Length: 141
Image (tube, rainbow, N blue to C red; front, side):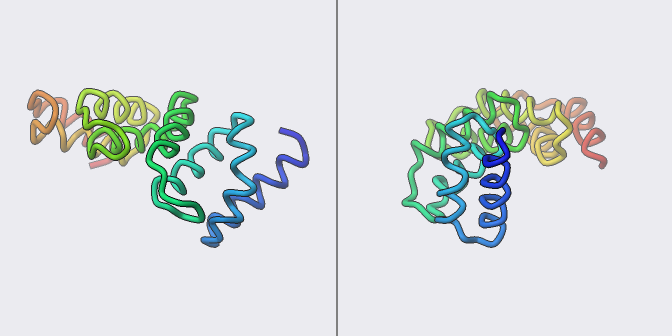
């Protein structure tokens, strides 16, 4: 990233945190286009929830997927939820588990806990108390 991109990123993230979403979108959208996975993730969230832009599930999925495929753990978790809930994509528990697992393997406690609960309840996966216990332990329970 250039120095200018760094400044835009900082400005965009600050605007996002301050809930000035249209400003955040203005700064972060070009950086998402350039491949910044944190910008992609934030742009996806804004499209997903209609923050500073009209709600656009298709764009939300596009940007969340790009960030997730680039290894962004929270975006992987986001893709897991999108598939679990059928938000912008067809409900697909197999895909949900795939994305939650990728995020969980990066140490994301939220994904580890979600996987543990899925295995404990047999929600979208074969019930597996041992695997549930393993994921709970990794999440610090």
